[in-house]
Amino acid sequence: MPKKHRLSRAHFAAFKGVRRVHGTLFTLSVAVLPESPLAQGALPVGRQGKFACVVSKKVSSRAVDRNRIKRQCREAIRPQLSKLGGRYALVFTAKREAVHASFAEVVQEIGKLLARIG
Image 1: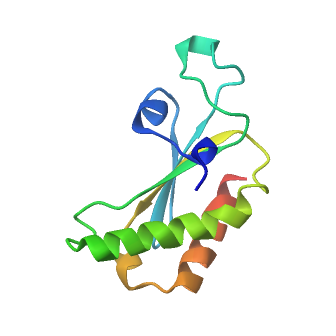
Image 2 (image 1 turned 90 degrees about the vertical axis):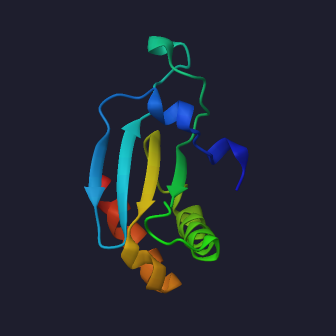
């Protein structure tokens, strides 16, 4: 994933007014990126939205499963980045149900979550 689309903890922690949308496999946390990097002391960001996929050890103790969920999440988001009209910071937090989900289910779930924030 290109660096311009990655979201660091420092970026997301700087935002206020985070909105959460819950699904069966993921919880989506959404914050609006500031228009200019100098506005309200925010960290500099690119012109497009940024996102992150978070999978905790509570979801699965196996690193193989956590990494698979992250790869599926990133790959499901990639084609939809250009469709996001606004400048958003998106954090997808996986739930335990995501461990046994297929890639098609992940794509469908992420599509639903992104449609709900639209």
